[in-house]
Length: 190
Length: 116
Image 1: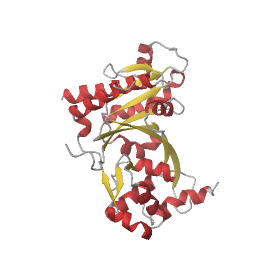
Image 2: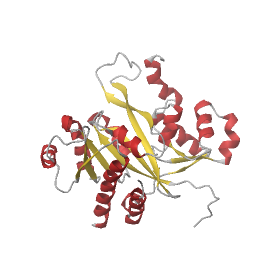
Image 3: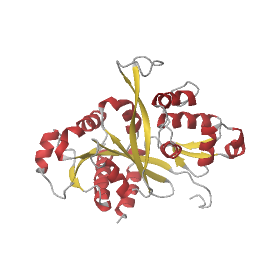
Image 4: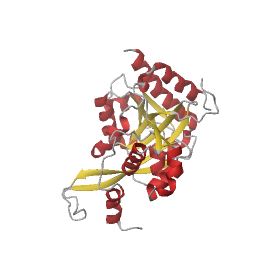
């Protein structure tokens, strides 16, 4: 062990919190982060036919996507970051950056708008990142049977499906623990 | 509110026309800490670089720098990469393979289990 008086720079690790707009990502991050969650914006360059506004960069347009994040200090050496991001195909640029080296992902689902989480589910399936689908209980109750949700999302039995309440710290903790245990299972099974 | 067109062009102006960081793979969770050289050179730096050097006397991530200074995340990555190349800041990037290290994952699990 190094002396504690020496300034330490922790090694960062991260979990991705994905899902559609307004699904509870920001709330979930805020519930468990030990610091006030921060928001930053990433510039996303997408192909566009609208060249009027960005005459200097023809055929491209710049939009921004908000990234909400918080953190949990694990110990002196490890700091866990939680990055909440909307899962949209057209934000592919940022997704690659975000997902690289992530421990896993929590995909939050609102059963009233299940379609919103398809891009995230597809992306994690394709990249092989361990992920868990978490149904946010907005009204404190489930409007669909869990297995119906699994069927609707077309996720395999290997993907854990949990219910949680993004407003409740221990509920978010348990959802994140499910992500970590899924990741642990994956790496120890190799 | 600033003119939106100006805002869109700002990232390019700030980074001298470059849109890729020196190290394009600098992760947004990368930890950044101002070096002694950076602290000593503080006065000679231009606005955003100076702000970053002043901010990172306490370790923080590229994402935090972007959020606190109101920079687009891509701009923050470029500026931090520049400052790191000049050795004005030191960076601690995520360790390769850490995400698949069972002992490390277990440490995080134990820490989360302690949250109540």
